[in-house]
Length: 385
Ligand SMILES: [Zn+2]
Image (cartoon, rainbow, N blue to C red; front, side, top):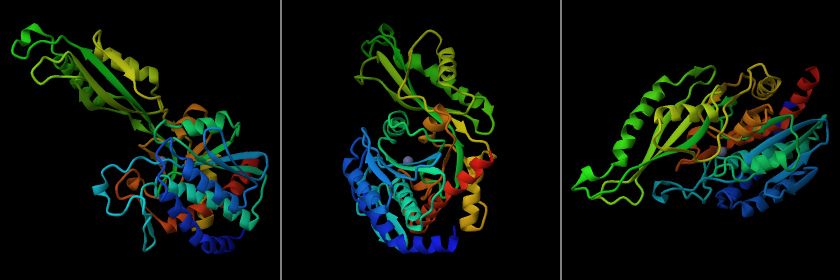
C-alpha cells in the first residue's frame, strides 16, 4: 500500500466526507431515535463500495468489506446526548456550521465524527482496492449514550459477528486508548418518621440518619485501593433527595445518588460489599444501571502494536497511548466479552457532550486513513502470533 496514493485519494474524498458529517449532524438522533440518521448512514455506506450493507433488528447499520479469516469490528455510535440549554451554544447545535476547517454541532465530535471517518475508512479501502485475509465490519450502532451498550451487545450477540478485534471510533484526539475505568451508578435510601417540624422529637429525620453515611462515603473515597495501571477508583455523592418532602415537616425518606468509578480489581460485588459495610443495618442499596467493567489491554498486545505501526506508517511519528477515566462500549467488548479492544477516533474528548461540540476536518481525514490501513497491518501481526 502506497501511503502517497492513499493520501491523494483521502484528499479527493475530503469534501464528500465533510458533507456527510454535516448531513448527519443536522439530523437529531437522541438514543432510541436513530432511525432517520441511520437511513442517511446506510445511503452513504451503499455508495461507498462496501461488499454488503444491512440494518439489524435493533437498528444498527453494518457494512462489510471482505470475507477473510480475521474478523475486525469498527464501532461508532449514531446516538447523541441532548443539547442541554440552547443558550449555551454559540453555534446552532443542528446547523453543522463549517468554519476554517472545523465542523460544529451536537454529535460533531461524539460520535458522528467517528461514524463519518469509519464509513470513509471503508470507502478508501474500496477505492484503493485494499484487500487481505480479513472481514471488516463497520458498525454504526444505536443507544450507546442511554442504555450503555445495548447496540453493541446486540451486534455481538445477535448478529454473531464474532470479532477477533474491536476498534471503537470514539473521540480520542487520535490517541490510542488501551483501556479505561469502569463505572456504576448507585442509590441508597433511608426511611424516617414524619412529624410536624415544630415538634421534631416526635419524628425520625431521614436526613439526619443519612448524614453520617455521607461522611463515611467521603472518607471511603480517600482509602479506595489503588490497582495499576488504572490507579484508584472514586466514589462521589452526586445528588440528595427527599421525595414529596414538605418544608415544614420532618422528612420520612432520604435518598442519595452515587457515582462510582472502578479499576480492574473492583467488581459489582466488591462495590456493593464495601457500601453495605458502611451502611450497617439501615438503608437500602440499589444499582441504577448496569455495571460497566474496567479493562486494560497490555501495551504489547498485537492490536496495540498494530495501531502504533499504522499510526507511524501514516503520520511518521509515534502515537500517544493512554488509559481513560471515561467509559465506552469497551466495557462490554473487552470488559465483559474479553475481545481485544482499543479506542481511536477523531475529535477531542473535552468537546464530547459540551455545548461547544466540534471536530477538525483534518482529524476526520486522518482517522479515515488510519481505519483504511489498520486491517491489513493487523492481519500481518495476527499471522506472526
Ligand atoms: Zn461517545
